[in-house]
Length: 287
Image (cartoon, rainbow, N blue to C red; front, side, top):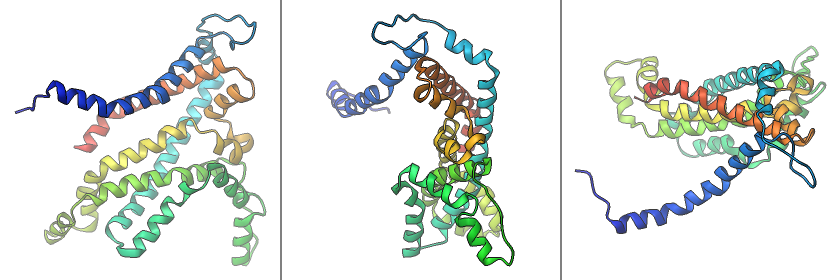
């Protein structure tokens, strides 16, 4: 039977949850409400400036094909980076969770979370040093191989993808690792005694049971990559113009906060729509 909460229990529960609700209100809902208000203004409020409510900012998005093109470009980038992170991250998490023990696991786990210990700008500029022409990567390969290598990956889409994968790959590894750690080793041993091959164990046992962690990691990668702007701007150069960089320009360079806010809420709506459309498949993957 369901346990009935008394008034005292409800007060205690409210007291325990109130700091979290207060934090959500101050850190999330209030800023979002302010941005939503800005998105309906025709100009930035200021000293002596008159403003009015309008739908012109959203009309600008739907009538200017550039924004739709950049939004589609950012969507493709997010899908590609997410797919690469999943393909690399899940095997790494599987090795960490089921194949390595002791201090070797601790050392590898430390390497996984190492990017979180440095500033994102430091990581991006480090990749710029590595990927530029006559950089660390080219010199290293040229010293090993008997012929000169000229990659010059800087200011290309590949450089943007490399920087984003490096930044967000740990999310997939960590969430998948936690899900795989929760799988009892006795289940794997039982499957082996029944004659299941490694591929069958991976496909019929590990992947279904670890799907919630893998999906959580994929979402943690997809959502921020859709609006990323630092990696594309620094590593992509002229080719690094994406939807996120346009939003940043509206706030920082053009100082058109109403249009930037409207573009931000369009991006938020698109991400929520994609997640809503994918939710039936995600629920089936969890079951």
